[in-house]
Length: 386
Image 1 (cartoon, rainbow, N blue to C red):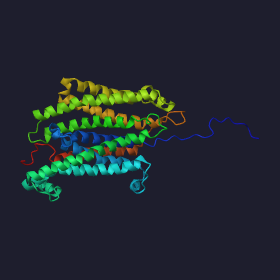
Image 2: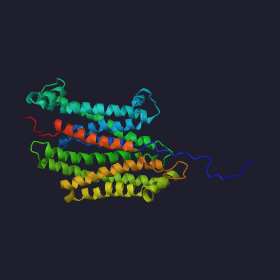
Image 3: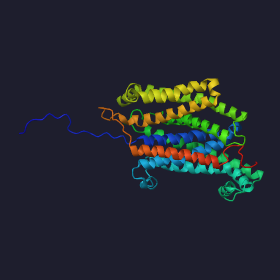
Image 4: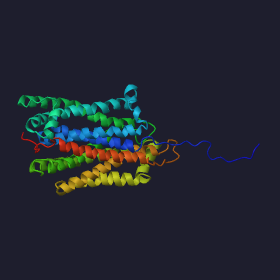
């Protein structure tokens, strides 16, 4: 017999983190889209007229974000040319299979909804303008150039009907992302019925924050008067006031979730402990809670700050930062505790993936800028007389 050798490990399991920053950012984009669309539907679906000026802005936001969001999923596949398999090989027991169809149906319905919302502008612009914008509006009208009051009323009815269909789709598209995580029983921080609601509420917070910023920019630079009128100012301040409640509800859901985690199984408790005291303490307590929730809540709750454009912009940017941190904390942090309970796996993002993330972000900014410039995004745009 040979010499006896002490072995510490007979076999070492390599612990993977399959859902990385690409998936986190994808969740972030779909959340922004859902949140902005829900706000834009307040006038078209619920009939609250004072929110009509943000309807077009929210719709264009929702659609442009949905154009870029799936690109993160395709890159994450590592074999992007096989993304069509999700549609061909349907699995009735997989939430991801349903999500693939939801992610297709939602942007299509949003585009149709948006077309009826803009059809009046396209028809009038096609008749009044002779420059490139008039030619573009004629093309986008698809030959529907009727400018009678009756046709506009029909458009509004169709917008309302499509909006009533699209609001549940918006909720499902982002709610299913939380549902996917909630069904992973091995990951304690995910396996809770609160997960879809946490994702939805944070989507409303971030979507409203971005909508506030883009509304101020659109009114300041793209409206006829090139300034924020008193009427629009009151609307912006009203939405900013709503943010106090949105952030409060989001924070309450997060607190309840962590109370549950501390009384759940070992995996849930250990992951929650890491968020509060361990590896994710800075990104959770500082980035997500303090910068993303606490400070914006205080800023939006103080009337003097809430009624200043600088205060609204800073608070909104912090909510965007905090929700992005939340996506990364929950998605990546939820996988770092090794399933055998013997350690915490370090996540090192793929540099190529980071390049795609920043590239897609730049593409999103360019796409939003182009759409906002080309389309009659404000109610009192300067392109033609209504």
